[in-house]
Length: 299
Image (cartoon, rainbow, N blue to C red):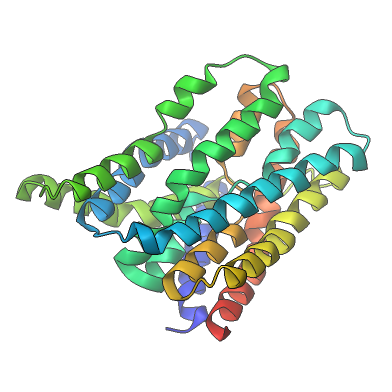
């Protein structure tokens, strides 16, 4: 399958979400409710259903996991460097810091599924299961001075982590889902990716891009250019190939996570710079992500 056939439909749904939010004048509560439904029901169903049927080769996956953890930690270091590069208030840095290493799971799962089908979803689900806790802990550690929140409860109760762990445990135990449950989860899984992409588009904002421009564009550069380049080098050095290399590089090249904005606002940081980074990385990844995917396939 060509890169265009993979990317164009995915970003078409994102743009459809952006248009629907503006032209249909849907209430804010509708989109917030839909996002919560996808995050707590549809995506966990997709991950649990896929991983419960997968027969994951953990020995083969370990190099990918090590590469992913390594470039995520390096991304955190690059994000922290921005504190000394720009003179914005600490609450701006705390929000912008996340852009250097957090990733949009909705886009990642959609692209992984288009690239490799269910094995792709299983592989990126496994990698996300390791990196989401790491990213959350780092983000909260920097944001903590700006507010209060039971971050440990949020981390342990993260539905994507729970679904990943549950699906893997179910698979490794050799269990099988009852037919009715399996079919229900499959229907939820089918709906999760298109709905998730539409919600990503609905959340984009195209105003106020002059706010905290240094932190904004530094984070964008790290997320879309430097981090994928680091992932490429580490992946090749580790001998990753095929599914494992594609997955490691894909996750590094994804746009910024929408969850970062919600966390920044909840913990008293600058939500606007985070929202701007999400919008800009999502739009620019329409150009950068196909390039990285083409490079992955070209060797």
